[in-house]
Every structure is written in C-alpha cells, then in structure tokens.
Length: 88
Image (cartoon, rainbow, N blue to C red; front, side):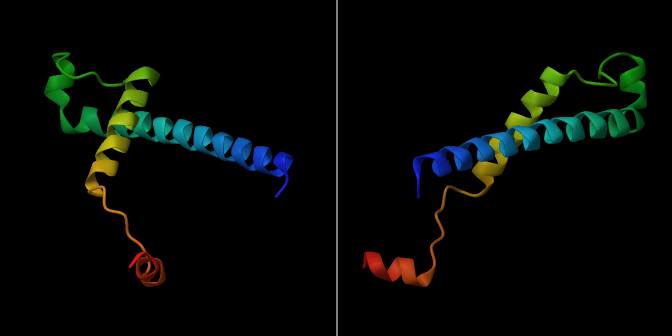
C-alpha cells in the first residue's frame, strides 16, 4: 500500500470520527431539550436544572458517555478461535 493511500485512509478516518462526534453532540443536545423539561418541570421552573445545555456541556456529556461505554466493555479483548490458537 502506498504512502499516499495510507494518508488518505487516516485522513478519511479522522474526518468520519469528527463528523460522528458532532452528530452525537447534536443528538445529546436535542434529547436534553426534549426530555428534561418534561421529566423535571418543577426543577426547570425553579432553575435547579437547565432546560437546555450548551455545546460545550453536550461535548462533555458525549466524552463521559464514551468513557462509560468503554468501561462497560470491561477491557476484554475478544479474538476469534483461529487467532487464539496461534498464540498457544
């Protein structure tokens, strides 16, 4: 594989990851604005809970959820039977 092809693949992967992160942040903002005021109307009215969140707060929630998702996997690496038999 040529050097330019590797650079193109890496660049494409970074662009796709960035777009996915922005979409995930948008989904978090939308879900917050849609559900929190309905779930906690008195808390929103008393300003104990924000009815909307900023882009920065949504990014922090996205990173937090990504960390939780990573921890939920337990750090186990799953290999196929063929790969496992090679190491033995």
